[in-house]
Length: 280
Image (cartoon, rainbow, N blue to C red):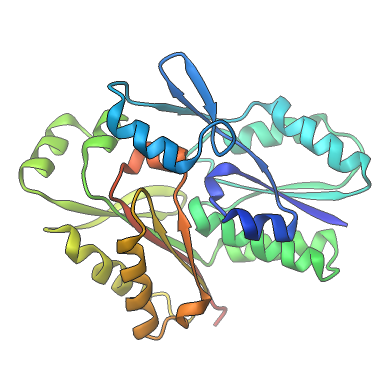
């Protein structure tokens, strides 16, 4: 059988991940000298509480090739073939670690797929691949599907503050200062594998409406998720707006919390929307 592997930035809800047998290799969040595996040693809720109380800004690091190789060997020993689906190589060295592990694995067919995205834009590719594997699709068919869906994914995030991007060195200090002074709420997207600015809105209350409008550009959609960090309420509002706009019925829209790695950069109060456009 084909087994699907992801890294922890996919942020697939645990129940769905368990249902489909998707394996996860965690990235690491570091507070000073303390290293914590994303979703293993620290939960998302624990992370956001610590993010706002700890004077040290966390950093993140990719899994080692050995972490991937250990998992690949275990799956191969059980007779499985593997499709390993990951965060954009332009955003993280995670996929390079997976490829280094692949080069050391002899035997079972293994493909590493760069989704050119992250969060549930990446996660939805893995979910669809795991569903296809469950339905008896071949390794080649699952790989082809994963690559096709990666080209149809989209991801937008609205940030409550620029402070965490600035702390992580993602933008200049003056830009962060001006954003805070003006109460600007930036909207970012992952496009062509990179985080790129879209626009700015003046208040957090404007974010759900604008994110829905941006996602509407990708209609029709076949998968959709609203994303949140420390508070689910704005994401629920976003889900309601998406359902009212006819993107997908409310019960088909997944609610998912952004984990510690993504949270390190977007900070508390951020919300997002991720999906897969239907093939036209």
